[in-house]
Image 1 (cartoon, rainbow, N blue to C red):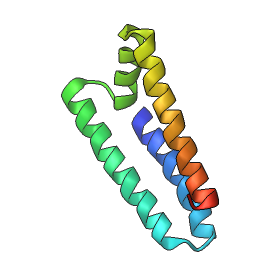
Image 2: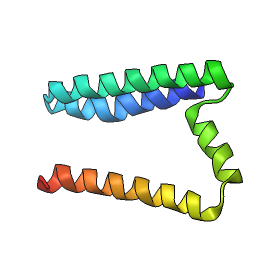
Image 3: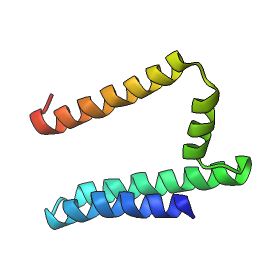
Image 4: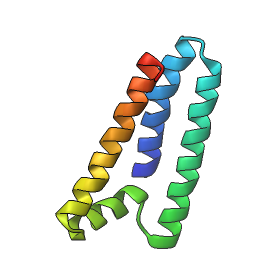
Length: 90
């Protein structure tokens, strides 16, 4: 049920502000992303017994530190660029 809670928070924190702003294409986008993520989480849970988040934490505990840092730095760079793209239009 953790995946359901995470997806609910995801859709509420992203969907509600966009809906209030009247950005309906964005609301539809976040619902689609959330639905796809939910389906992917369900498939992962049914086939492996773990959510994708849990699989990440298992991998993180076993992987060399340089790999973990590389992945985390990559995620930070991606999200940082996405924020700058939305703020500045880069």
